[in-house]
Amino acid sequence: MTQTLAGVYNHGRTVIKGDTRAEVVLTDYHLTEFHGGLRAELAIAGDFLRIADPAKVQVNGWAGGVRDLQGTILPGLGTRSTRALRALDPDFRELDTRVILKAAEAGRSLLHIPGRADAGTPAATPAGAIRDLLRLARHREHDRWDDGFVVDAGQDGEPSEVYFCEADEPDEPGAPEALDPATEPGRWTQTLTAAGYHVSVDPHDEDVLRVHR
Image 1 (cartoon, rainbow, N blue to C red):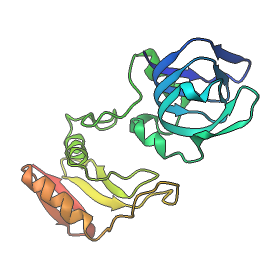
Image 2: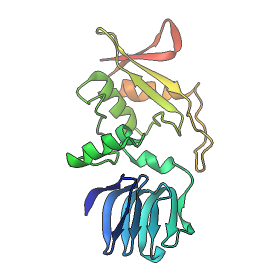
Image 3: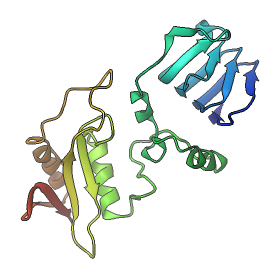
Image 4: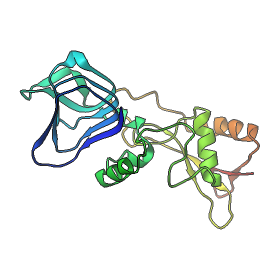
């Protein structure tokens, strides 16, 4: 089993005769045909992924359309929704192929691992630790599909800031119920104070929590 199988070149095609197992399969402007079985956590098809036998496919999450070998769309596979990209680590959700290929070469998984901070906010930083704590407590983090919390690192020794942000694409198929921005900060405060953090409301912005040890 490999971590990432990526086709990102816009010429020719790749034909895979045998069975394939991978964490993530990505086809980005490169025609990729699977003539055997395919098992993956996430397949990002982009309308360039073709399947010989749908019965041999086990994919937990789809983003993009899937076709048979003749180019006809397979209605039972794939999806127009991009919500499955939430399975990716936030560093890779923009599908920047340069970043993805660099990570694959380094042997880094593209999948989001609960409890692991992103490269921009490592767990060793106060903001990274707060972010991990809220994630592990199953509070919803903001991304382009979901409402949720955002953590900003404090500057020059100031406390970190936590605030609510609405989804950029809230109406995608499968979107969960919208969160209430009036009640979410109270839930975050309970989690943070139980873990030993000091939480106060920013005196200049009542929608922002200031969080520190």
